[in-house]
Amino acid sequence: MVIKPTMARKAVVLSTLIALASLIVIHAHGKNLNPIPTKRGRLSFSPALRLGQPLFRRSRVYPVTAYGADPTGQSDSTNAILRAISDAFQAPSNRVLIEGIVDLGGAEIHLEGGTYLISQPLRMPNSGAGNLMRREEETRRVVDANLSSASGYDYEDITLKDLLLDSNYRGGGILVVNSLRTKIDNCYITHFTTDGILAKGGHETFIRSSFLGQHITAGGDKLERNFTGTGINLMGNDNALTDVVIFSAAVGVMLSGQANLLTNVHCYNKATYWGGVGIYVRLPGLSQTRIVNSYLDYTGIVAEDPVQLTISNSFFLGDAYIKLKSINGEIKGVYIVDNLFNGGDTGTAIVQLDQSKTPFTKIEEVIIDRNNAKGMALKSTVARGVAQGNASSWTLDFSKALLFPNLIKHVQYTLSTDGTIPNHALRNVSDNRVVVQSSVAVPATVYVTVDQGVSTV
Image (cartoon, rainbow, N blue to C red):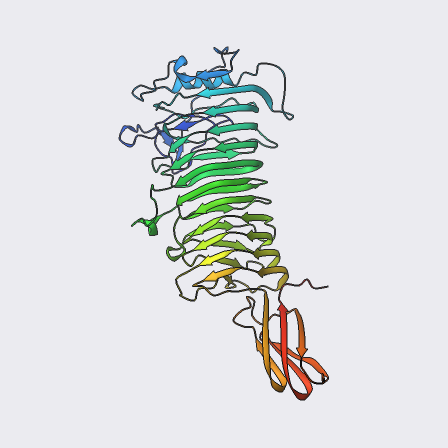
């Protein structure tokens, strides 16, 4: 495995290196950075050290200082950390996890709370491996783990835990490629310019109890309009975020994979007012995403052509709203229910449509209902109304309540009167208005329920 720096990483980053699935961690000290010769914007690579015999075969714990690494960051620790990584990647037996993934027996590379000077990129062992932990305490660093292969998975059962990662505005934080069952736990990632965490391919990456922000702030930052980058970018399937906070970035969470679950995620990155997005669901036609019990704080949710999307039991503050964006005009199996919205009495709708590219034409099984709004305008796909009077015609206008314009798929009404019930019928449904007429004028109350999201048969 080779670390492949992007154009954003044009200088040596100083730090402790670990590989997520093959360990690399970097603490960038801006003034001490030494440039590396580059070609076409890429950092040059040097071959990894030859695998040696483990120093700690019995315990499978590899403290890098035992290999000569300097935890003060004063002298170069590159070769020492390479030796520790090489030893950790020597499997204690011929056991495997899944096919092609050797079992490292719970190997742990320990950085012992230090800050380390790294002078060149590291080349990791090419063979796939798993059952590895990278544990650290209070130290500042950046993690960049690039796990690439032609097919299948490269790593399994990798844990990154208790890290403070400082990217020093030189790129991203953690990069995971084609990794299976990876855990990122209790990490603090800051000063990134691209992605705080990027998971490409693979599946079942679990990110929990972590904080991410491009700039360290507690909200209300004067430079908020200039926030860039993405807190967490999931380009794979079956991942989960739990108890995660994104406190500054242009986009809090970007989702372009299927079947991802977000629970207890708090986004107060760049506000919608400045063009920010809290959670962006970017997989037109097949999202299968669940966002529950989360907190969108002045920054909302955008979903492109959502199919099978659930947003429930979440809280939206500061006129934060949900935008459904049409790319190919399809929306199906969307449930936006039981959420709380709180705004500033500006008339902002809790759910909005972006049909600038093409209108939604395939609308099925869309339920937006049972939401509560204070200082914002409710929008639903289900609406209820009552009309009273001594008349032969009753009109109910649902255009302010319903989300989709000129669309009512189902109408249910009841005509109630104390006298003789006349003949009556539904006469017109257009422009989100319903007209009920009777054969004669009577004093009556008409109750109407309409639905925009019922499936077509």
